[in-house]
Length: 289
Image (cartoon, rainbow, N blue to C red; front, top):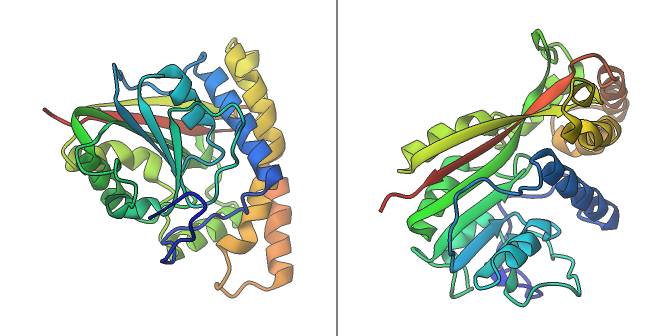
């Protein structure tokens, strides 16, 4: 893996489903703000104390990386992403960005990303890019010091209402899931993360589940912390899935008209209805001493 602004020497095992352009950066930064709002101001849940080195994997715009740098000013924070991270003039001095594939963390040219070097490894929303979750989690275990923490935050793909899963017969969902499987993606990663952590040797594994509401229904039920997120998801998720679909189903024999039909199905199925939501899972565990 190569340092920022140095061309990578090998092809990535993973890829973005949406180009990381200025518009996508804006969406990601707003999403970060709303996730933090949903969690009452918190960004992570692991009981990290007095860290020396922290790794933010798939850091995107660096929003979490900057937060960690400010939260732990005496620690060194490393953000890793496939794309070049847009630098902010307010970047804390203790933050370093590394461009590369997160499957190659153990082969990094960054001398501080080595086995047993990290007190905390964090990742969020790698669902559309990570192709080998068990291997990645085992790598994180290797990178962590004894008593270090790994935290994974992921969304669960199916849509629910109060009666259960409602997306089983959505045409675009079937196509999306088939395309994901063909690309080696696991859309059930959120609910499998705890088992993968335990299998990799983590102890004290905890799971917290949040609702990702498609609209304001959670706020109307008294959970005001979900209101802005609900509006954002209602507005942005249909556009997001419409944008991802052509790439996700590429190579599966769909014509351009069939893809457009699937995109129309996204808009039809993601109309606001009472109780419509996805689940957002936070899973964290400790490497034993």
